[in-house]
Length: 225
Image (cartoon, rainbow, N blue to C red; front, side, top):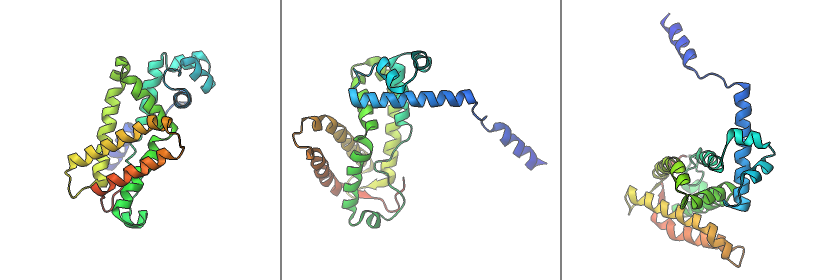
């Protein structure tokens, strides 16, 4: 009887399945946010207007404003989606670092840093987030809206860093600080690459930066993300 009661309680506590209307609403919101990401990447923050997003998402003005009545609401919702998965620094899975990355621990760190640039930052999602972050520097209202989410994301990211990396010479605070420096650097490459005359120059800069950082860190054995 007790087990039957427990099972019934679990069934009652389970979240209700979303309705058809709720599913349709989520599909529409995701479609609109994906359009925002595309517009931010292609046109920048200033030129990402509601009209442009509406056209890109191929929805009516009423449908768009029903979900997002202002540009600020569009940006806040998009940032929340971009930050929802907390990607550890480089997409690592459980394995022996040397066997997975083909050599020394230093080589593993270099590979992870380059992947941070290639797979996280230098993507349309990474560039879109960068546009919003730059805008929030002077837009106080936008800054206030996205700051809590960014703080939560940073805390989660830093916890992941300490699960993956260590240093013989640095304490945990400095390991986190070093990764923060890396994140700031790779975001700055978005601006730098616009002024590089040679197309492959940014890639070479990133690889050299990774080589300089790698000796200061080690991948933890059995690191998982």
